[in-house]
Image 1: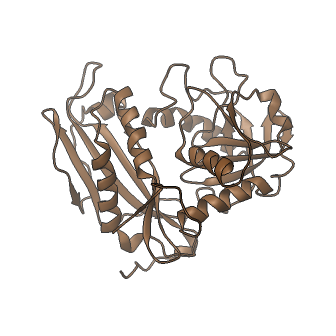
Image 2 (image 1 turned 120 degrees about the vertical axis):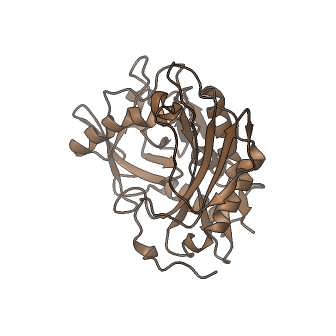
Length: 341
């Protein structure tokens, strides 16, 4: 397969149209057979549920070129399961897991020329999404829906590649208790846009959101989960019902325990404890892990001693192991890697 003529080494994290997308429609109570299409436009009624009441959810995963030249996708079954939970919470029809994975594989295969070659640090980002497509004027679920998958070749999520980020403790809330923070709903991200624009205007890379009920416990950023490391190399992550269950975080915790023999703990983390950690990272599909060097709490600077100048030693081992699994350098746990045939 001849690759497209792109500047693979200098890709940013932005949208570039590829050859094919996948689309399936839910009409009259059932999903159609679905198909690949070269049409990247969506035509729906102006009163569609997605426009009127933000009835939408989405996923994000990646495809890679391995050292031996294969194209693989990372844990698409986990994305299928997470989208199922999101659809149920938003009163949307579930797109079956088996069909989800099959659609991902077909879409990647159709866009194989856009999967960056091995060695450039770039990937093919895969965005499955679903939305209410039929008209809704009263507050209620739509009757019809569309499921789509687009792909786009991307470079690093944060400009400048891997570098230590500076965060601010946000005064805004990302998600309410008993709300939708634990699903990948479009409305969650709409709520976070003003907060991230405000953070950028004030010179910060991202926000640290606290729990909405008490504003005392660490939750996540607008688009990534937190991982902390203690002085004795214990890996600790926040636990909350309003945190998105990041597939990257779940994978990193498994790697920490099973590959690196590190102690792992998932629990509530008071903001007052953050100063005691020596490493901090933001983890997610887009960034994998980005080191955090400083967190500013209303003028009070909390410096992560071991990640102030880049990835700390434990974070680096986690990053190297996960990316090694993704590119085929390290043997993956069963089911983590799906080869695109």
